Picture (cartoon, helix red, strand yellow):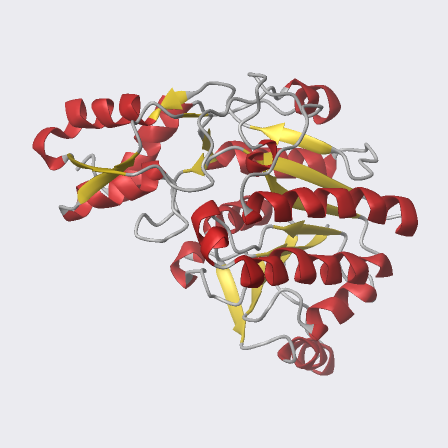
Length: 338
């Protein structure tokens, strides 16, 4: 049985990943400071909450002193910073086979407003986590982003395309990609960087500043609000349903390949415009869809479309759920099909 850590496991992607890992029979610890996490996203799991990392050793000691074993399906939720000293100490002791590092301060617009804070978390704390993993972690699966391309001139975009970050968030992801490769060379770590393309689906709250347009619009429709449309609406995105991202993480985790800092696009491989999605929503929900036009957001790129053939070749990734099917599943989660 593999013992794994999921950082940001009460967030959108992290919670979906945690549920899938428990289904595989792996022992899962989650660390999340709950700044963007939601307890209810782990609903249905056998979850034990530890107020912070200092309680971890105490829990282990209690089990030992009482002659008990931890239930295999129990998820430990450590409510703390992912780079806290207790988590890093556990990594240095080789407690985990695999770390799925999903935690970050996401979204382009917030990084433009708060470059120092987002750099401190997304770079500084991730470097600390990687260094702690030198203690014996077999593999780190790290969540990068398609934003590193910065509106690539080549569509579909292969991983070899030159990076051109256009926001602090994109630059932070690009910098950690470089550090991941360097860490593998200097410290014999094995890190794989997954470049997610516009992930959406159940568990992504639409009123969060980090929500994608799809989730924000579903939230607006469900609550009688206006759907904000930035720019001319002709920007296109390679929208990736969350189950595809979860699948990519697990496939990379079980692969025998030594990744050594390699980067991979994770997407559906089809682009859809904001206008096209809104028109489909209008056709489906009628007058409930009220569009409010807004200026284009600083730092946003015009088009994204990924070439995911490298991930297929190296560890067997293929999208399980394509955009329109994923959109229907997202409607269902929001209760819009009732």
